Image (cartoon, rainbow, N blue to C red; front, top):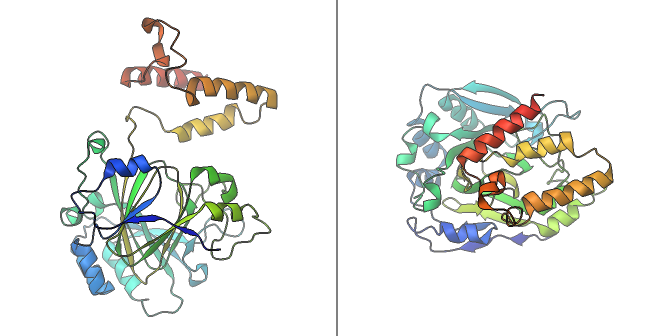
Length: 341
């Protein structure tokens, strides 16, 4: 099946990234070559070893977490066959030692898989951003500075999953393929267990390289809704929170830097906690009760934010009015009190 391609924009200057327009689209988009001037991108275009030497210059004494799998996992960091654990091992090593292990297998037809995932740049590679960074010149970042992470490895696959933040992924060394799905495709992606998980988030059970359509027939519908982003060094990809993304690193050595951020105030809790609480309190109730609670949620949560308080005087709005830090603190205390009964 030929999949739709993510829209791409050419000619965007590094100091003119249209962050507001990207957020307004609420869909993935590639900005071609925005990071092509980064020194790390230029070193990677010279050679993988040149990129490795450049990264080593920023190494600290703090070891990084590395995931390693046997050649037979083919770079797919996933579950073991019984779903009781993972098909890889993890440990902590100096960054330079990990990079040397990766380089030692550049010429192997079937190398072991190595993956350094979601590693905070400012903690583990201080000064790297002074030379390799996006210009975050939009008001949305003033109260919500992004988390900036680096991802390093050989040919690896991060199975389809969603994140709770908006994301800009910068392909720095090597090539990446993102296969993205809108949030409404969740049932067609057959999510795995809530725990354990390969990387902290629930992942699709489908092997994208060899999908079993007998076991996962709705995956065909997911593919019909999918969009593919093929990233070259220097390209950046924006996609909104909760979009599922399956990420393949395609070269013998790959580096990605990503920016996660939210536009909601920090005092708001994560809806992921709400989802878990709903499983505890709602999911297994009788269907008529669930339907009634759905109506209440539509009224208080998913409908217009001002509807529930519109007929009340302002002094009686309480948490029905716009949420602020004080109201959030009161709601959190009330909820904790009820949960600790």
